[in-house]
Image 1 (cartoon, rainbow, N blue to C red):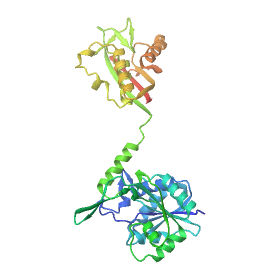
Image 2: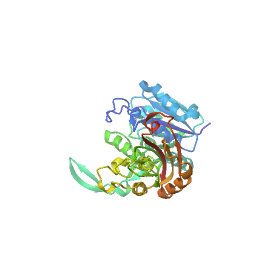
Image 3: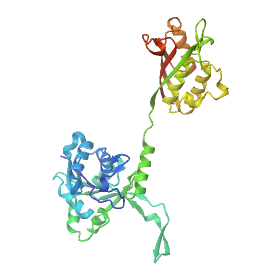
Image 4: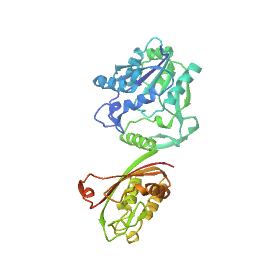
Length: 386
C-alpha cells in the first residue's frame, strides 16, 4: 500500500479565467488542465494514492480524465466532490486517503505544468525532515510597502519567496492542523504553521506557475509550444510531370540521354531532378520548387537539374537538416532505365550527398504516360536534424 497520498484540488469555479466551466476542465493547448496536472503527478517516482477533488457537476468527467492518465494505475485514483472553499475541498480529500498514507501532498490542478521532479523533491524532503515542505522561488521584483496608494518603504526581498504547490506534510500533523483550523488560510502551509508546526522550503520550478487568468493560460500555451519537440526525422513527397518535346534533348536525373526524345520545360525539363527538389523542400518544410525557383525567374531558364538540386540542398542544409535518403520512381513509356540505373543512382546520390534509389514503371497504356505523351516522376525524401 502506498505511503504517499496526493490530493489534487480541482474544484474551483475559475471565474477569472472566464472559460465558461470549472477551471480544471478548461483546455490548455487542447488538453484539459486537470489532465496536464495529473501527467505531472503520475510521472513522479514514488507510488501514491491520488485523490482528485472536483466539482460535484464534473465527477464523471474527472473520473474519465483520471482513467485516461493513470492507465493501469487507475485503481490508485479516486474522485470526490469538493466543498464550498478550497480549504473545505482539501479536508474532504484528506478523508478519502487510505490508512497506509503517511505523507500527504496537496497540489492545485491550476499549476498544470508542474514537473514530476518537484513531487519527488517534496516527498523526499518531508520524509527526511518530518516537517511541512513547500516549494518556492526567490522574489526577483523590487517590493514596496504602501499605504493609501503612497509608497511607505522598500521591503528587503532577500527574505521573501514565491510559494507553489505541491505542498507536503506528515499526514498525522496535517489532519490535526485541519481539525484545529477555525479560519480560512490562503494555503495549506499557513494552516499548518498556525497549528505550531514547522514548514521548510525546497527549490520550486518556474513551470509550476498557476493558471488563473486568460493571460496565464496564453503563457502556458506558449510555453508548451516552445517545449514541443521538433520532429528529428521528416519525410516529403514530390511529383513532377513534363510533356515530350522532340525538339529538345533529354536530360533526366542530371544525365544526358542521347537518341531519346526530350522534355518540354522552362529549364531543361528534368522531371526527375525537379521531383527530388520538391520532395526535399517538402520534407524540410520549405515550400516547393515553383515557389523557390519560379518560371518567371530568368536565372533558371534552360538550367540543368543539377542547378536546382544544388540550390535545394543548400536551402535544406541551411535550415538544419541533412538528407537521409531519396527514392524516385519514373512512370513513362521511355526512356528505359535498365542499362543506366546504376549510373543514375550513383550520380543522383553524389548530387544530394545521400543514397538515392531509382525505379521505373509504366501505366499500362492508361493516361498521358500510357499514351506516350510525357513522363511523371514521384520522389520521396527523408531528412533528419543535423
